[in-house]
Image 1: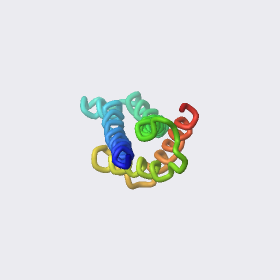
Image 2 (image 1 turned 90 degrees about the vertical axis):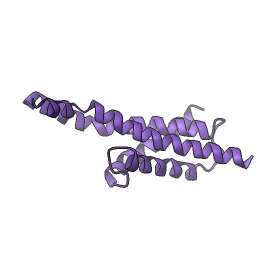
Image 3 (image 1 turned 45 degrees about the vertical axis):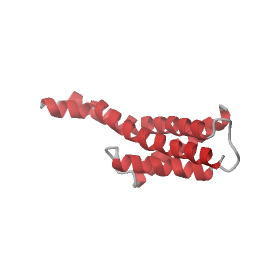
Image 4 (image 1 turned 135 degrees about the horizontal axis):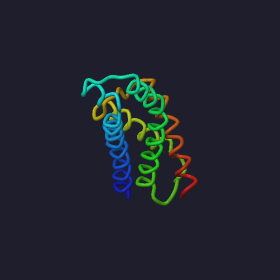
Length: 132
């Protein structure tokens, strides 16, 4: 049964890696500043929208990261926690950092991302333990 454990753990890492890459691309598409710059029409209203977007972005990222980590935990451990999940949580976090660095638009190995990622992964783990 060791191969099943490793394949589910590996799948959880892939989910976290690809999930953060998709999240970065999605938030880049939703950025109102890109459309204002592309059209050449930068107004006070577009600047206000960009400022609001940048203020809400960390909260949205933390929410999506919590959802990604919850899904990864559900895939790796479908029948509930088996005890010590710290290794799996670290693996999910590393997958997110690698995904952000190589697939996303941001730098994954930074304190800015760690400040958002760590509470997001913890929130995903809490949700996982509550919603078994």
